[in-house]
Length: 133
Image (cartoon, rainbow, N blue to C red; front, side):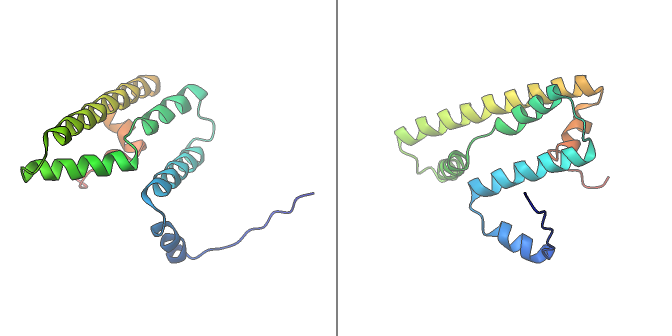
């Protein structure tokens, strides 16, 4: 036998708890929140759309790779990279580019499936931000 328990957590407390997560935990939490949001907006999403959305969200560098890419990019600007680090930077940049291509291919497929524009799909996924104009 199970019992449902419903509690109310103040938004500030929830945000504080989320703010204490490390980057990987935060990314995972965000993926779960976005998945929950998608279920509420369209609870009967076809499995083919779910698979595309999963592909879109999975095609990213992990937190360590993003941080390393950022660090190496900043050091490139300062002209303080060693040759081995330059090779590492290029490899990470190539991987990020390949993942972005994969993401955008999946976004394009999802747009075709939904009969929407790329901008509409990107907005739905929280990947396109406008300045309100």
